Length: 111
Image 1 (cartoon, rainbow, N blue to C red):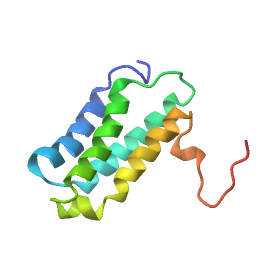
Image 2 (tube, helix red, strand yellow):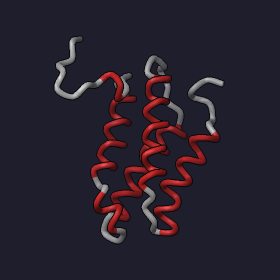
Image 3 (tube, rainbow, N blue to C red):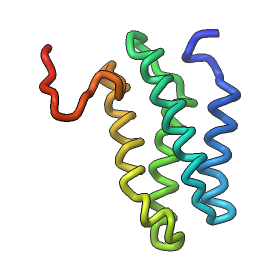
Image 4 (tube, rainbow, N blue to C red):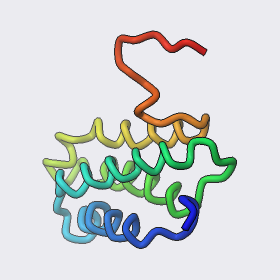
């Protein structure tokens, strides 16, 4: 299976984090952390590919949008609003063919 094929594990992680926040208005920090970690690994796996699956793009967008939309109503979502920025940054990194492992804080990039 290539990294751009449908990924049932990603679907489950997305459901546990995002859908739970939207439907039950419960922010599960552990579920979002698992989703972040999995998508970071996925970014590393597909950074040399020319395509990114719609499922991956949707998961990234859903996570950031759900956190932002629920922040006014769910206190834990409001406290973790910076996580929405991290998911958007991950999307940006994927677009340019990078992953979080390629970026070390405080260390200049050599191109």
